[in-house]
Length: 447
Image 1: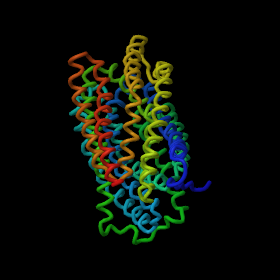
Image 2: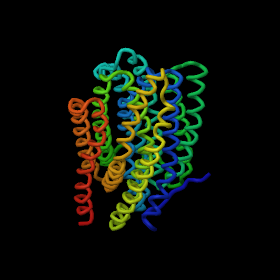
Image 3: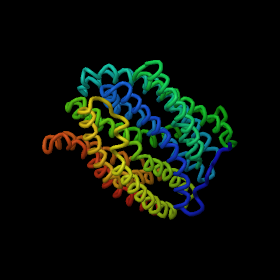
Image 4: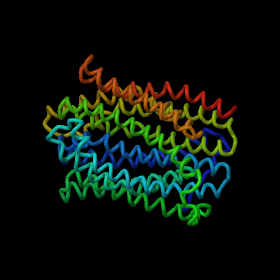
């Protein structure tokens, strides 16, 4: 198996973007598969209470993952620009410095995660019946922060060079390992929700080793000791790209925690139904994030090569492909959503029916509005690929404000189901800012 680098500065933008995104999409499907299997095993084997505990820990776990992805995606922007410009020396220094910065930040995040896990769960008024399970899940997941950082950095390095296939193979390996360990740890050994978390981390460790093995085979990334030295303006430039993206994901997550705080007041069945659909969020978003990764690499390489006209052509092509994809996924979820959701839910017939009703209503709302989310991912990634991570951060703040305000106000006005529209309003607020930002940044780049 060889490393699959791709130069995205030549050829049809639509074809390049789609063929780059496709393996990422399949890889994300496998990643979501083991997230979904986690939820199915926990929900079916351990009951509605354990499923609700997963939901209570969801946004805190996602926040840490979002910060990690923000840093590593930001680092990858500079790598893609250097690769597109053919500047191999600066590419190597960017990779070396990114490895050191990722190592340092993972230690800090590990400490902060363990320190604040319990206080934040209590602040969110997590029900006493699920508090212990939610905290155990977070404790185990946060222990694996260095592993998650290493995987995301290695995948970011590969994507910046146009390689979307190696992360796919890594995710296939991880999915197989995670599903196997889920069944072993939870069903056979009875390790409960902590076993499900441990299975995920072990699987990620194998995917990380897989990616690093193939990075070592890339001749132009043979790093010297000097490439790891944090000197000059390079570390600051990498942090300037990564920190706004990390902050953007963190602020979005805080908005999600406010939603979870409100949901926690609606009882365990509502939390379980809300969690079941939230676990499908990744499936709804799977193609959107893949197109986003493709556009960061495509835009970064073309900007580095000085081919600015291709950025606009690629953006139009990506939007068309993304919108078509969102309509197809929405149709699948609306037609088969109840059958899929029923795989996550257990309990008495009354509990099952009530939880499924809550979950499907939320799924239908999100599916119908999916084109908004796909537009958000494409436009935000183009702006980031052009080296501007501040304006996308502003859109993240808008997303936070809309999500938090809607979560607090809508249930008061229309009842519990009003909480389901918080997500849609958050996407809409972000898209408005991003579209305006896109035209500003593209004018500046072309000017």
